Structures are given as C-alpha cells and as structure tokens.
Amino acid sequence: MFASFLAEYSAGRTPNPDVLCNAEIKFKAFLDHAMDLGATRIATGHYARVREVRYAVAAGAEPVPGAALAADGLNRFELLRGLDHAKDQSYFLHRLDQAQLSRVLFPVGELEKTEVRRIAAEARLPNAAKKDSTGICFIGERPFREFLNRYLPREPGPIRTPDGKTVGEHIGLAFYTIGQRKGIGLGGRKGSDGQAWYVAQKDLAENALIVVQGHEDPLLLKRRLAAVDASWVSGAPPEEGSVHGAKSRYRQKDSTCRVTRVDGDEFDLEFAEPQWAVTPGQSAVLYDGEVCLGGGLIA
Image (cartoon, rainbow, N blue to C red; front, side, top):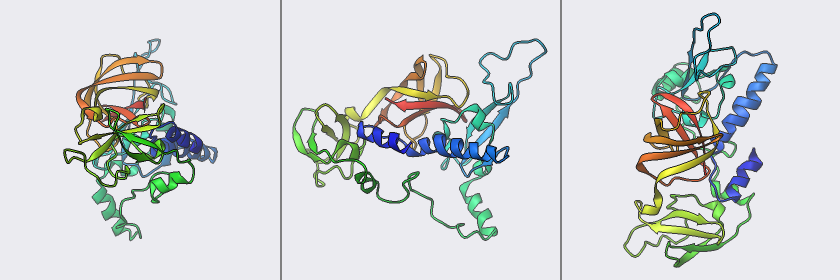
C-alpha cells in the first residue's frame, strides 16, 4: 500500500492515504485478523453509521432487482453519514464492501463530537479534551513535504503560466497539488493584477508546473470528471443518467451531478456547477441523501 501511495505521487497524482488505509488496513488486514481470533464484529471511532436493510423474498420468488447481496444473504447494508455532519467520515469509507460493512460498528456515528467529549470527560478519559487530529494516516503530524522528501527524488522544472511564460522553478511535480496556493516557490510574489498564484495543472511531459492567478481562474473550475478503480459500498453502481450528490474532495459540500457513463470500474460525472480544483488521485464519492454509494479515483 505504501509503495502504491508513493507511485501515485511520482505519477503526478495526489492520493488520499486515509481512504487507502481504511480499505487495506483497518477494514481488511485488521478485520480479517479479528475474525481469525473469533470476533464477529469490530468497532471503530469513525463518524459514520451503518443501516441494515432487510428484503423479504417469497418462496420461489426472484431477489429484488438491484438489491446487493450481503454476507448473510439478501440483507443489504448501507453506509450513512455520521450524525455530526461537520465530522462525517463516510467519504473515507466508501471503498468498503458489503461483507466488510456487515461486520462493522461505528459507536460514535450517532453522536455529535461535543457529546463524545462530554462522555469522555465524565469517564475521566485522559484524551477527553485532546485537540482533533490533523495528521495523515501512517504519516502522523509531521510536515508532509518533509515526509515526501525522504522517499521521492526531487526533479526541478519550470513553473509556467498557461501562455508559456516561466515565472519560477519547482522542486518536483510530486510535491504540489492542484489548487495549492502556499509553498509554490514563487517567494510570495503576487501576479500582475495583485492576485495570488494557484497550481492549476501538471505538465508531466515537460516536467512543468502550470500556475494561474486568482482563486476563480477558469483552469481551476471543472464541470466534468472521469473516475477509475470504482468501488461501490452500496453493492452496485449507480445507473447512467441518475442524479446524485457528490464530493470531489473531503472538505466540500455535496454538489449535484449526473452520472453520464458507467463502464466496468470506470464512471464519468457532469456537475450542475463548476467544481474547484478537481484533483487526479483524489476520490469522487457519490451520495443518495444520507447514504454513501461509493466512488472512484479521479483520473
């Protein structure tokens, strides 16, 4: 998993380590180990919920069309947002499958974070007032660029504007992400119109970092995206033409979109409103109200 994480950065993409960790470590390696020990469920502190939907099928009747089969038959398990929407972590759990979801408990998913802290304080837990973690899975709280420096070689190249003007030099495309404003390497210089620079694109062929001026530059706004390596926690992909809410990054509100193509483990989305800084390697995750359907990697 760690090798694939670094490979994504080397390819100019920005992977989400928390999504990878949940799918490969917490709900695969750890879950399998717990089952081997004789456990029937595992419980984690994620702000999410699970709802079991039971399907009654008459003798000799066919199963409900489109109903996902869970580990114990016709029952389906839905991944729901955490009750505290400000802390909801369903985005990071969208790659779980029905068998995994059927064996998981999320005790704090039904609570607001303030209530969790109150309960912890009453129980005199030493971390009741601890600050929320901002660290990245398997990396921790250390500076991220410093971490990448240990594993990825620096390959400097030009920083250019969309019209080809060179305005600086980057230290390596792997060290930047779409939408980045700070730490680009332009020494805090503003553009000709006084607006800040933002990373808009990566030209891998030329090893060039493309920057634009202003938060709302057209190169930072996209109405469409293509995704690959799809995983549907709901048990089945959405239908072409269906309309859903979707996130193309964790810290954003749902945006209305239409599924324009579903082909194997690939799908395309078209948004009603332009999305800011759609980033290859991040996850596009679809929702039907409170229910997380799944998603894929932005290509």
